[in-house]
Amino acid sequence: MKVVSLIGARPQYIKEAVLNKAFREADIEEIIVNSGQHYDYNMADVFFEKLNIKAPDYNLKVGSGLHGEMTAKIMIEFEKLVMDIKPDVILVYGDTNTTLAGAIVTAKLKIPLAHVEAGLRMFPKDMPEEVNRTLTDRISNYLFCPSKLPVENLKKEGITKGVYLTGDVTYDLYLQSKDHFDYSVYKEMGLEDNNFVLVTLHRDYNVDDKKRFGEILKALNELSKETRIVFPIHPRSRKRIEEFGYEDYVKNIDILEPMDYLSLMGLMEHCKSVITDSGGLQKESYYCKKPGYLLMPDPAWHELVELKMNYLCEPEELLKKMKEKKEYNYVPNVYGQGDAGVKIVNILKEEINV
Ligand code: UD1
Image (tube, rainbow, N blue to C red; front, side, top):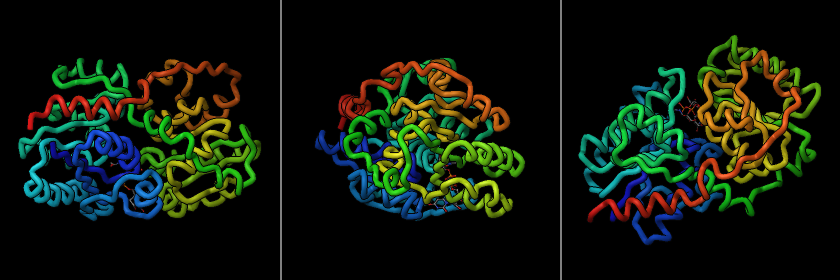
C-alpha cells in the first residue's frame, strides 16, 4: 500500500508524528507532502526534528496568502504530484486550508480519501476551519473520529459510511512523548510549579478583531498583576499586537517565540491553568489535568466543557471565571486509549485492497 499524507501547519505536524510512527512500524510506505503553509523554523521544521518525523518527501512551499490563493496554490501543486505518485490512499488532517486543498484534489482524482480528526463541528459556521472540515468530511471515504461526539455529528448530517471511532492521535502523542518533555524553558525562566498561567492565542476572531483582542489583552494584563503569564506567541498574534499598538498590555507578560511540542508540554505540565483558543491545546490541557479557559465562541471539544475540565469564556468574564472555586475531577480516556494511530493504520490495511 502506498500512502500519501498531506500536512502543512503546526497542528498537522504533531498529528503526523503519530501516524508516521504507526506506518513505519507496520512497514507501510508513507510519502509525506508538506504544503508549506507554515514555514518559520519554530512553526514547522522544529517539529520534524524534535518528534522524529521523517523529513517531508516533498515541500510545496506555498507560504502565506489569502485563503483562496493559498488553497488554490496547494491544489495546483498537489494535483501534479499525486498524478505522478499514484497513491492508494491519501490522508489529510484536521481543518486547515491544506486539509481542504488536499481533500478536493484527492476526491477529483478518485483516490480514497482519509480524514484524520473527522466530525468536529463548531460555530460560527463561516469560520475558516469549520468550512474546511465540513467540506472535507463530505467527500472523505474514511472518517477517523477522535471521540463519540464527532461520530454523532456526522450521523446528523447523514454520514455513517466509512466512519470509525479511533480516539485522538494527539492523546497517543502525549503518552508516547511524556517521558521526553523538555523542561529547560520552565527551569531557565525560574518558573514555579502550579504558579503560572500558560496562554496561546491565534484565531482570527480573537486576534484580527481589534476591539476583542484589546479586551483579551486587557484581561491578561490585569491577571499579570497577580500571577506570572507565559505566552508563546503565534506570528499572526505578534503582528496584530504591533499593528494595533497593544505593546503596553503585554509588558508584564513573558512573551516567547512559538515553541516546539516537547517544550510547550514541559511548560504545561507545570502550569496552574491554560488560556487558549487552540483546539489542540484545550485537549492537551486536559491530558495534563489542568483547567483550560477557552476564549472561543464555541468549544471545539464540547465533552471537556460538559465535564467541567474546560471553561468557555468571553474576554470580560475571564478573570471572574478563573477565580471561581471549583473542583477538577479528571475523567480519563475521553479521547481513547492512546492507540488511535495504530487503529487508523490497521483499518486502512484492511480496507485498501492493493
Ligand atoms: C492555521 C490554521 C488553523 C490552525 C493554525 C495553527 C487555516 C485556515 N488555519 O492558522 O486552523 O489552528 O494554523 O497554527 O488553515 N505566519 C508566519 N510564519 C509561519 C506561518 C504563519 O509568519 O510559519 C504568519 C503569516 O503572516 C500568516 C499568519 O501567520 O499570514 C497566519 O498563518 P495561516 O497559516 O494563514 O493561519 P494560522 O493563523 O496559522
